[in-house]
Length: 201
Ligand code: GAR
Image (cartoon, rainbow, N blue to C red; front, side):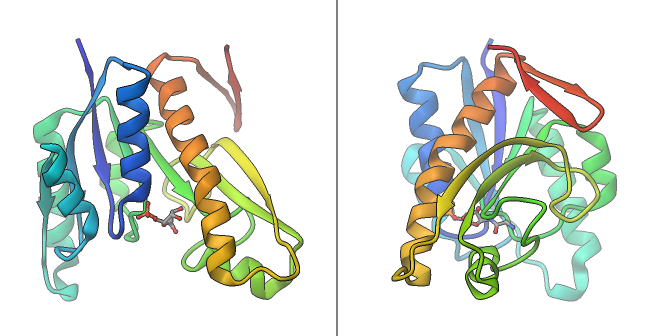
């Protein structure tokens, strides 16, 4: 039976596309059953629709965060997913939801965690003046971008790089490590001891 993946995304959805491509090419026994967004204008929703993947969006006013969280929880539960992937999802998941899926939510973050947590991580790295940055996949826990790290990839910040050059370079690495991390998860190759992950190839 195919493993079910729910993808959460707030924006462009390029990581969602690369994950879907990888699943298709590698013929993984997995299916993205839904793309859920907090942003009704997200391009990711249009992409999902074009792939025949159910696009779901909730638009609650900012002050109705609790109602949004409940609706999100209910919708995810309807799919009984094996895995949730936050692929450019810009909201913090509520603790009650995170606790329901321990080590079953994977997030991709555009920095070498634990550096540059939170929003605009690529800009943060550039402004800080680090020479290397990159991206990280990690399991989501109730800390901000602080869950157990699965994979990382390094990107050198060259002197003449603009923020958009660096974003493109980081994305290129994201498209490698997110699908791979999902693959390892689906094949049950990720072993966790304390905070340390080993991949049993
Ligand atoms: C990606 O770079 C991802 O790492 C980042 O959002 C981008 C989404 O791009 N996520 C975060 O910053 C989460 N804190 P995409 O919509 O084209 O996949």
